[in-house]
Length: 136
Picture 1: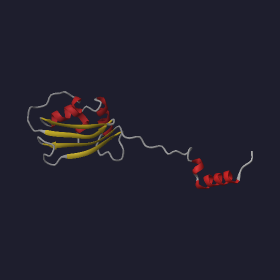
Picture 2: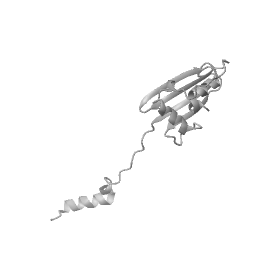
Picture 3: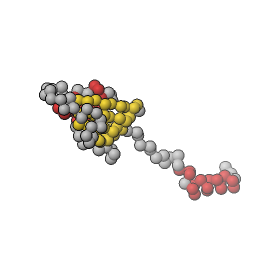
C-alpha cells in the first residue's frame, strides 16, 4: 500500500494533536442523582414559622448533602417512591398537645418534580410519621 503525502501529513497532524486516541479515551459523565431535595422543618403552622431548619439531601448521598442521616432518608424516600405523604414509619401513640411543626420538601426525584408540605400536630407525630426523613 502506497501512502500519499496528504495522508501521511493528516496522520501526523492527528497524532501530534492527540485526536487519534480520543475515541478510546471517553470520560464517563457522572450519573445524575436519583434525588436532589431541599428539606425544611419549621416549628409552627406554616413553613416560614420561627427559624426553619434547612438541609439538602441528594440520593445517593454526596458532598452536597447536609442531612444528618442521608442513607436512612434516601431509603425512606425510595420506600414510598417519592410520595412523602405515604410515609408512616412508626404509627405509635403520641400525646394530643397541639404544638405544630411544618415540613417541606422540594426538588427532583427520579426525573420528576417533587413538592411536599405538611403540618403535623406536634414533634412526636412528625417523627413517628416521617422517621429520620425530617429528623434534623
